[in-house]
Image (cartoon, rainbow, N blue to C red; front, top):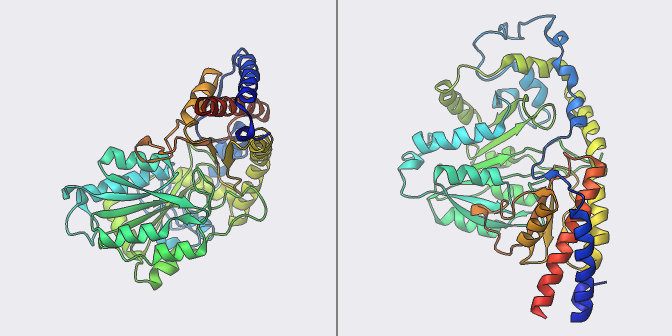
Length: 427
C-alpha cells in the first residue's frame, strides 16, 4: 500500500490506526538506546581472555628487549605492528601504535597542525584567517566535531553510491589553498556503509591540491569488520598516492575498539616514512610512550593475523542477525509503503535510513517519546544540518535482538506517522 496513492480520507484512516498502535507501544515504557555504535556484551565477552594474568606471566620483555612495564618504544611494540600490518595492508615501520582511541590520534594530529603545521606548511593552520575541510556526508559526527571544536570550516560534499562526489572534491581541492583536509571513512562508511570504489580511491590518491600541506584523513575504522565471508574489498590508497607523487598526503587511522574492547583497545596510524618521522617527533612532546602492557596483551591473545580474522567472524555471527532483522523490518514496514530508503551494507556498524524528506526530526522525536533513543537528526552532517531533514543513523549492534525488534516496531510506526501527517497536510 503506497501512501502516495491513497486519498485524503484513506490517509486519515491509516493515520488513526498508526496513532493507536503507537500509543500502545508508548504505554510499554520502553528504554532502548540505539544512539551509538557500541559492541554488545556478547561481543565484549569474545575478548575476556585478555583480562587474565596468564598472558603476561611468561615474560615482560619485548622482541626488541624492552621491558614493557617501563618507559620506551614510542612507536609501539614491533610485534604488535607486525601482527596488524598485514591486516592494514602496510609495513610495520610505517605504523605507530597509540592508545585505545584512534579519534584521539586524529584530534591530536589536527590540533598539532593548527599549532605547528606540517613540514610542507608555510605556516601553522591556525595562523590562517580560515581553513576548510571537505566533509563527505552523510558522514561521521565525531569527525565534524573535531572541525567544529578547532574552528575549521566544513564543506559538505555528498556521498554517492561509490564514494564521495569526486568531481566536486577535485574542484574544491584544486581551487582553494585554504582547503587543508578531507575526512574519509573508506570502507563501510559511517553511516551509509559504502565502500569506496577503486576508481574513487585512485582519484583521491591523485588529487592536485592547491595547498601543498593538504591531508586526507583516511579513517579505516571498519577495515576488517565484514558481516559476511565475502566482504567488500577496499583498494590500498598508499601505492596509488606514491605513484601520483602524494606519498605524504594520506594519513590512515584504525583501532581495535570494536575488535577487543572499546575502553581498552589499541589504535594505529599508518603513514609514509616522512610522516611517521614527523608524527613521532610531535608525539614525543605529548607522551613518553603508550600502554605497552596492553599492546602485549593483544599480541599474546591473538598471536597471528589469522586469529584476528577468526575473532571478526565471531563478531559477525553475533551482529549479522541484527542487521538482517533491520533490513527485513524496513522492507515490510516502510518499503512497501514507499516512504523510506535505506542501505544494506556488508559490514561496519551502521545502517543509513532516509525517511520521507521533511520528516526525520518528527520521526526522531516520536521515537524518543516512546522510549527509543536514536542518533540525533542532523548528526551525520556538518553543523548538524541535514538539508533534507530525512537521514537517521541506525546503530543495531548494542541492543539484544528482542530489544531491537521492539525498537524497530516503534521506529517504523513513527516514520509512518510522520509521513502520513506530512502527506495529509500537503493534500
